[in-house]
Image 1 (tube, rainbow, N blue to C red):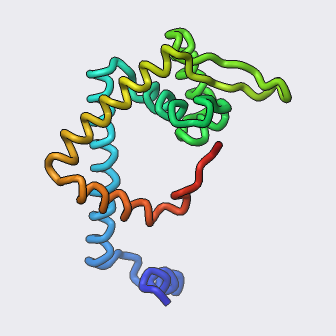
Image 2 (cartoon, helix red, strand yellow):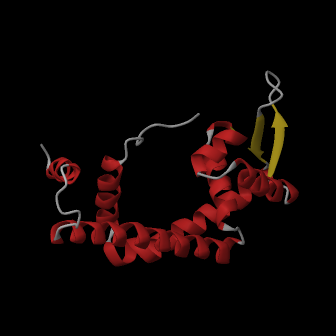
Length: 169
């Protein structure tokens, strides 16, 4: 039995509920990773916004559509993939449509299904924003750590993700 499983079983049996020093250290490491990555992502997306004038939530939608098959996706797929609520996705899509970056259309097979598709202008803006992100990554990650380190880190994180390699087309 793994230590974590043993610890959980021990707690159910009424043992001391306080985490051990080793568990506290493990939890602190996790906090450093997840909060640091969130702040770093915010910093990168701020770089994109400054260089390409695209808000972070808009960039996430534009990038997803730029890399999607046919540069189109169902609205519910955008919400699920990006972790947005339905209302949040609609709000972002409204702004993108007003700016002429996406068009929405209903499915001919099911009128309840709405598609978002990049316009030609949307492709240009999404490409500019993606290149701004690539520049920020080169400046903030590749330059200080090296491409090999980024490749190793990316592979290590991908190995932990149960959905790696799965694509929603």
